[in-house]
Length: 130
Image 1 (cartoon, rainbow, N blue to C red):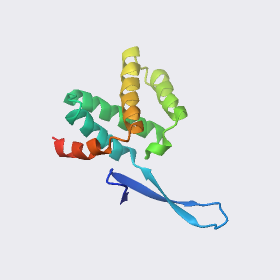
Image 2 (spheres, rainbow, N blue to C red):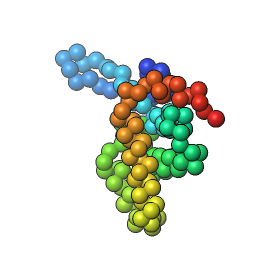
Image 3 (cartoon, helix red, strand yellow):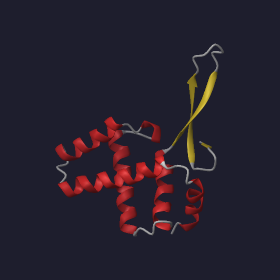
Image 4 (cartoon, rainbow, N blue to C red):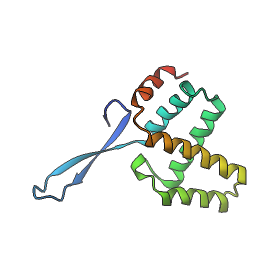
């Protein structure tokens, strides 16, 4: 694994470039578990969320990754998110409150990932880990 701009672990993949040069391009995909750890730190240190909330975030994100069989944030799609909720309601028989809890936890995490411009807060968050 390589480090991309100090923001956690990245997985290096080789991707064929279909151009006139027919060369190879290194493409870095951010590991979702690394981003999630930064998110937990941010939520605890900067947002002041309680440890049970962080535990809920962790459980939800890890369950989503397991069920969707994903490793990187780039693998997140609306289809595999919908599939998680369909699986939860039909196979795991989630209550409405469980459904809403998973939805809110994932929404907050994905919003945080989209607002990636807060890289300074992400780096500082590591110092607050308890």
